[in-house]
Length: 446
Image 1 (tube, rainbow, N blue to C red):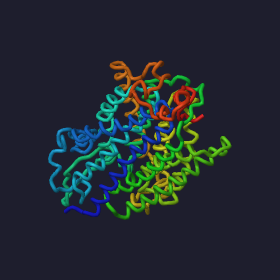
Image 2: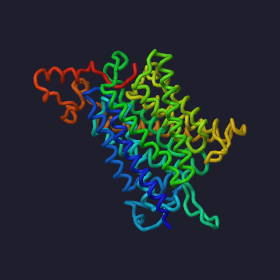
Image 3: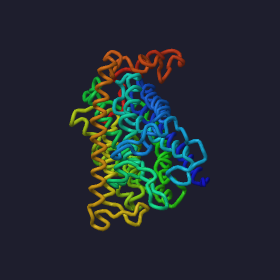
Image 4: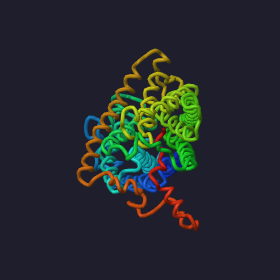
């Protein structure tokens, strides 16, 4: 029998998570140069459109079809085109219409792909990005979602009715809402793709700053708002677990903002709005896998460490020489790794997940499981992303020409400009020129 209250919560949560992708577009869009803002936002909107279609056709079946062997992939034909799921039947979540679960998981797939785009801001061809996004979702995200999110089910007699993925069931690592499947996955992919495309013109020589910080803060606010659906919705019910997760998500994010701002103040002498927005995202990323496993105080610890750690990690690209434009690696990969491993240190047996950690019971059992799950997704995503990116680059070119990069990717690729100064009358040409010059730089932190 369908539980209407839980169904209402999951559909609401799915809508909240869907809002996160336009929020990400604003967050990323404000961090790039004025001449690149539309292209940056289009990469998120393009992912939203494309992954929606692929999810309906075969993505859901890849991720949540019955396992075809070794916990690596769901049966691609079981739910092709979502066949058989429109009837009034409940899904593996229990009490939910199957389509409610389909919709909720769809928006996770969408934003995971969109997150990668921040690593290659200001230099990627839109068509090549769309081809890459479709291949990456098929080859990387859908299988990893099966590993992490698809649980084996049994009936009342203990007979297995559905076989899921290896990380969720065989390894028994905890990833409540996507620390591995979403953030480590996207972060590793962002690093690989940044290496494939190479550095932007002027990287390391020009101070590349966000062109619109109000957009960045608005985007971060929408991400924070939508993330309650992302995390609390993953309880798949309107229950105590959802309530605990909601509070933990709030606590960790607030603590991460403070952790980032204090780190900035001590390091640079200033606490910035970009730091506050980035700290919020870092906290959200880190608490995502751990939100059902830690106490509210544990969530604060996870958050404050995430804020400080990610604030320091975003500078690695200058030391190591890779151009991760909008710090997908520093925030999502590092934050996702910390949040996933933090379960092994800070999980409280009184929390909904009910597992013991190193600091609550003295066992390293959960810690090694978390480390293996995180490492497997990191390596799998990095290697396959590098291969896919290299093939797309060889087949159709992935990066715009240097001339087009200087001129501005918005006008060259999309024949549009994010800011039309011609309507302002006299002197507008000069204003437009200033807004689109290479000296007006995008969101790489100095």
